[in-house]
Image 1: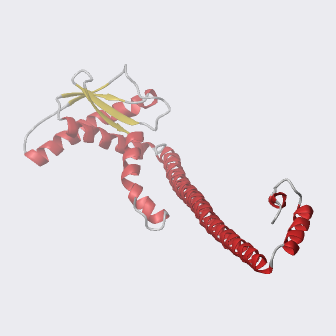
Image 2: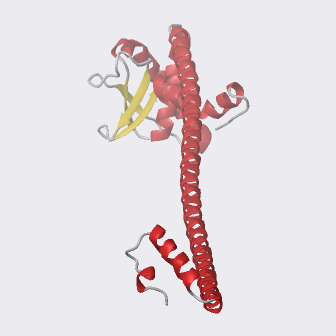
Image 3: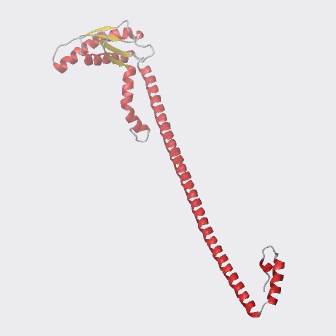
Length: 250
């Protein structure tokens, strides 16, 4: 009979083995075989159970690892896409900024050229207007043109204070040319009384020319050299751009 103390958990491994050996020596052969079979069966089941537990644990580990790897991959891809979109946006903004800057510089350069042309034209006109004969004929035509636009019986002519004498000498000729122009176009006889406005004067710094006014100054025609030059320059801008900026008219 096997002592009960042989299977007590309080005994250490060495004592258990000693008792097992002693018990095996004391028990019959048939009983020993049965015990050995039971031990083998228990160990085999324990081994199978351990392998099953290990396999299940490994399977669960691989599943969890795959989930973590997938989540991290998705996180990395999302971060990459975010950074890629940000980079594309920054590149688009930089490209748009560069294009706008280039356009502004181009517009500024064109404007500088046109302003230089205006300055050169003003300088050239200043020289041309110093010729008395040319200036008188030019002023007379400006007055007549304004009269034909107004078609009034009485018109005041404004000019620079320095041009009072010149403009006064142009008034009779302008009245005569106006009457002839009306008769030629309509066959009617119509005259206009011109007078020099001695109170309202054009700025001394302008290029000259005249301003015609009627109806107590409520109707005004600006025929100064400055306004005429500005109008001509504005109309000539498409041609200037086409000639100077490689065929571009806008």
